[in-house]
Length: 110
Length: 113
View 1: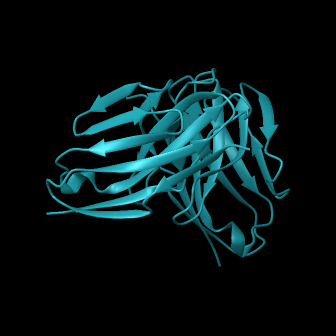
View 2: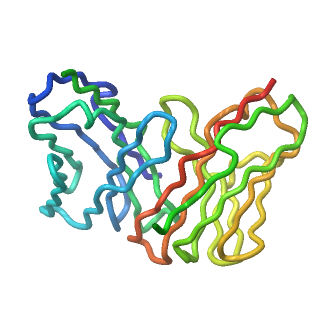
């Protein structure tokens, strides 16, 4: 059974204080790892897909990286508008659909 | 803009009173999904459609049903809602293929009185 664990559960940063969120996974044959951003009361918004170890994707202040066991979402010089819950999900060869982690709730203080 | 639209955004129903949530999409995606998300938890897949081919998750309660009359619309019916069914219900769509990202609507927040 695929498993996805995100840490920390919650993270508070000062504006401009860079940090990383972790997504550890156990799957049989990774087909893709997805990062989403979810604002309170809204649906998840797609950010990135990573397919293989060593791959990196960037979007504004966010950079996602992937190894064989985990993915990191690096946030460089965050702003208050980056505050949200960040969800990680995996798609494997053994599961028909996505398996989501519980998310990291990020708060960026001005 | 192409998007996934869920109605209503907020729904209040009484214990045991049937309720229907709706989802429409302008992305022309073949696959549609319904998820249940409770506070601070991961979205939990209830069912999905590949075109009209319906796929039910093994642990989806029997009082949850779904209909997809055409490519653009999908409905979630809860026949006899219990207090434990209070949650955010998310609809998502994707193209066919293992690595296709899912695109979500903003959800319907369901409350049970």
